[in-house]
Amino acid sequence: MQSKKEFLRERLRAKFFVAGKRDPHILILGLGALGGGVGVARFLADLGYTLTVTDLRSKKELATSLAQLKKYPRIRYTLGKHTMQDIRDADLIIKNPAVPLESPFIRAAKKKKIPITNDADLFLTLVSHGRIIGVTGTKGKTTTTLLIKHLLGKDAIAVGTPGVSFFDIFKTRTLPRWIVAEFSSFDLDLVSRGPSNAVITSLFADHLNRYGSFAAYAKAKMHIVAKHTQKDRAFVWYDSELARHFPKAYRGKRLWVSGHQLPNYEKKVSWRVSRPAIALAVAVARSFGMSDSVIKKRLVSFNAPASRLEIIRTTRTTVFIDDTTSTSPGAAAFSLAAIAKKWETITIIAGGEDKKFPDKDIRVYGDAIKKYHPRVILFPGSLSVKLKKYIGTVERAKTMTEAVRLAQHTKGAVVLLPGATSFNMFRNEYDRSAQFQKAVKRLQR
Image (cartoon, rainbow, N blue to C red; front, side):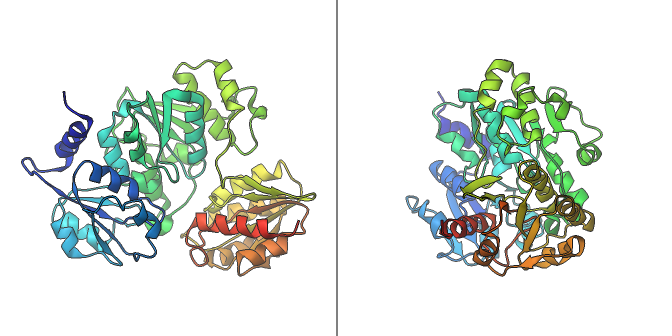
């Protein structure tokens, strides 16, 4: 009987490797400081492949990721740079999401016809598509992924969420009935065929500094339904942008989901869980035959994930909320509307760097600020300059500590709601969250 290791190696050989090549050399282009490449490196090393891992960051910057690979002495590293020699030596390149498709190293690999893939496409190569429920969207994909898994219970596992590798699935003795997988647009860039069950939560302009246009970004998102057949399904939240950009020639069964399909017990669910997440997760669970009584019981017990409208501290007069994952103006406007349903007095800590958002999207966030009239504290950055034009009076803060101190005596809700990246101040959105939570916890009681 073929072992799991032999089966996985055979699947990889059939798709990526030249017949008869006994020991292909794999290059992981970008390890990632948050451990994004650790899962695939560990997985491939366990399968016995020869690996080179290369990253523009230094050994010190990658210390956390490298520590997780210490037990694999055969992995070779090129750190602080990428090299063309590593490209030439590779039989397969696994591209980290942070490496743009326009990279000269990717162009060189394409010219030499070296196969290029990424974690998501590799994962989809190795697992039956019928088992996978793939979730994407500009806003709400992590919450929706985890909520679907929660409703499906022990028959499901969630992968691809922040900090959880797609390849963690192979640590299980047997594959569960359902694998609920979160896919970012960068994950979907190289996906040749989407999972049989696709869920799309939202579509706002984002990452236009990488994609160049909203149309290109939307097209990347729609790779989740690539090559769907009549047997496949897409659960899609109904809004004008998704209706406009969903493939017109889609061959599968498209199921539009809207607020009209919310269960009558929706108000018993935490306010942190959005209406699209609830409606989509319930639609998926019902489609797999789950009863409403089981869905209701599990739905009301769901805890929303961290850093997504997460209440991190409550004082006698003020509640501090972390929504660092609202990294686009559209997502921030969406969150602000949810917060305004709970609190009349709001202070937002916002702004940072632009990702070439269209002015109309920045105006959407500005209009939401005008509508709910929160006090606004802005970080430095190109997005902040543009946002200021639409909202009038603001206060400024050069550090997270300063922003939190300015906001500390405010009554009501104080929310980290950037609507932007902050690479000019923080390593990433999770570093921004950590600094916000640290500054809040330092405040005198």
